[in-house]
Image (cartoon, rainbow, N blue to C red; front, side, top):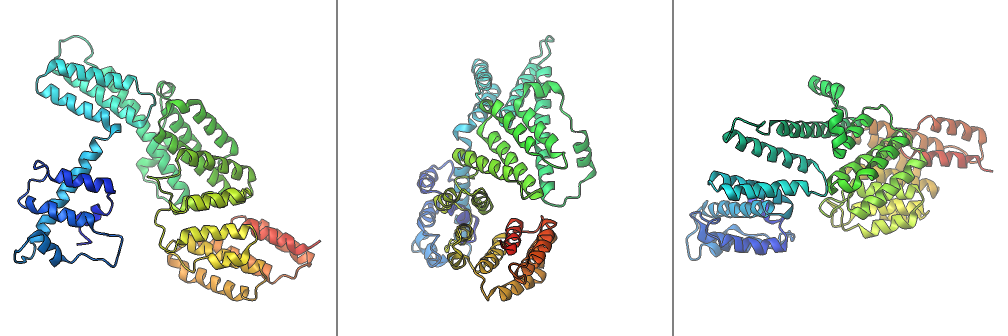
Length: 484
């Protein structure tokens, strides 16, 4: 039963939704199958079962006996009830989603069409006037707003065409204008996402995409009337550049501030996401850029306050790590600890032993020179490859700081992991940067403190390997070898 579509859906429901579904299932219009009498009893069992407790399983025969009281077991009969129960839950979620407050335009639009097809002309005209007013009074502009305008202009054109008085333009100019505005907006949005994806992974660009990227221009008349489209297009032009500059981030940020009051929360969340990505890409190209680290920290502060870093109240493991790591880089250690503790229960995919939290807490402990405490909290493994490899590097750094005799053995094990085990887990680029870290750490480990000539050679080597992971730390340790 646990692997059925019904149970998968039920596991995602809130307590309020579970209560509402039972009332929903009592409505014969939605629960009208041959097994409708058994649907509610089955739902009560499934909705009240503690699915989070792996030790408590639902036995199929026990459920059958509770649903079909005093009836002989028939193979496949319970499954038919489950199918009908799944339809009820599906209908409930669809209905609940459709009647959300932010779907009001679509609801009015659909009802307007019903009024038209039923010949209620006066009511239809009133409803159309309401739709026009909703669009005109919209406080913020979004991609949804432009799509709604397209639907509205299309409906006006359709009705005027049906009742063509052989005068006027039957709304064709307005419809074409809304079609083009929405087309340019959606196209540049998708091309931006494609270009950003291209920055982080190898893509074979199809010919028709290459043509779009090369010929993607937006007429000035659309850019001037739509701040949303203008910002997306400016992002497109930035993404076309080979290298980003700090000035690019400031330009985009100023543009957001200029139009912020007219942009909806979803658009702002995406735009701030581009700002953060631009900052990270600059850091990837130059990890010694302290100004960008501070800009990124400020962006994280703003985005956290507004909820832009969360998805449905949750933080991704990567984002949780990125925020705390950058705070440590800019020496905001107290804030980093506060962040780690405040949001540790918001992490998507966190396990019972809180491995993601512990990985990040270990980095904080290392930053405040508590190396033994750092080693004690690092999880031995992780299903998240990035965390696992990062934890192994952190372990090596802590052993180096402690001048532990275990370091040579741990370093050999890490090299073995990178050269063999990680081949199926890491990209070629990550294998290279991890290997460079291991090789440079080995040179640090085998160097004699106070040997200024050796230290100078090592500093020069590290400075040429800026793509090596833990580059800043490696360079600091090489300088420390010089002594006074």
